[in-house]
Length: 426
Ligand code: IMP
Image (tube, rainbow, N blue to C red; front, side, top):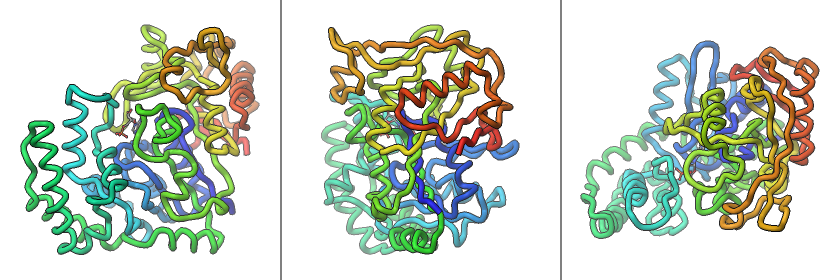
């Protein structure tokens, strides 16, 4: 059984949760490997909607195990709230949910520092989700003040770490940002409590996952955010602080690249972005509004309106290259059902030059004008389609062109939010 990574091929919100939910039917273990509570994965089962920020959405399938790897920064309050919500709705997680002992924690001072930085007059405004992700990864990389899951299980060690860390953070909060200092006591008490509740789930995730693969189990790695939000390969500095690309699945869990069989890039049939940063095919004004309202494009984590635009094949080609995509899962095709004509960005005009590849210099990208190809819309509902041939000819032509321009075959098409609204080309 193959090991698969599902990643976002654009700027996040591509509909990964729906694709992961569908692929989970054939998986044994579902794993998150990067990001934190900045992710918002919505899954609709029957009439009930579940939004996950910390736990892999595969947890909805009661015969599957779910793992949060070391690359994730863990917000224990959010994680425990999700466990309580699931258990309250009758989904037991005991014995099938695991958290890496070496994952780093998001602490209250991470959120306070992020808020102060985003509100300050100086520096770049990223437009973050406010979940403390950047400062948590900063502490991890800086090494002096990172708090890991294993520290939560040892109150004495946690107290020493917190004292040192909060002293240092208070210097910045008070002197740089003019904010009130934080108290060690309540934070220590809260995190010791979280540690007690999380203890049954803590494990060496690398050992667990490698054994699962050795036993022939199918492991599905669920990426959060998207390729262009990757700290290295994204539209820096308007990115998140982790490796959202396929390589992150290895470093973020402790499995080797030779253990991966497939990488599936999830892409919308158009493009969206939340937060600041360049977006060449963005539609401003009425056209953008129309796409936003057709697609109900508002963030699952922050409720912010998403910026909307046409499909941009240069982004998909970059995604294909960086992630080594073996196929594409094309989502939200049905959102385009009512559009008379569609545009596909095929490359950019930059001054006198024509660029085929997505530029990694943000200043170049800011000045790129998309080159479009126009296609006829299908003006017919696609939600009931279950086979490729059920799609109207214009929709078939659109999917084929997307695949051609993206340099990857399409393995899955999603035509609605429900699990069954899926065309499985594989
Ligand atoms: P952070 O991850 O909260 O630091 O935010 C950094 C950037 O990534 C901002 O532009 C966010 O809007 C964006 N971002 C973070 N998580 C998501 C996501 O799950 N979907 C879409 N955008 C995201």
